[in-house]
Amino acid sequence: LSAKIVALAVGLGSSIFRRPGYVVDGVVVMGALLLEVFLERKGGGLLVVVSLWRIVRVVETAFELSDEAIEVQIERIVCQFEALREENRRLLEILAEKDKIIEKLQQELDQLM
Image (cartoon, rainbow, N blue to C red; front, side, top):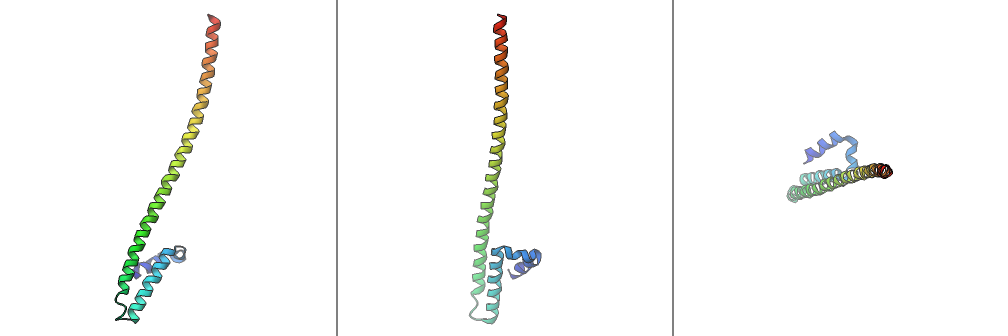
């Protein structure tokens, strides 16, 4: 886990600090490793705590991803709705023009009879 945090820090650079989850992960992992080194016998459960923390983070990330996916779907639906609204407006205009043409042709037909 600590190697992952170091790799993220190297890969993301200073932008890692813009993601609170990564920062908290780093603090928890590094803190657990330091306590494990300094409190060898008492700190045996710290790696378990870090592992449990990681599970919590994975679940949280899954919820964040599902929220983002839902937001993307909502945005797509809104865009589709706007496109359909515009198409409906355009078709209503065409229908009104066709109605005028039909009315005009009906008047011409009435005059011929």
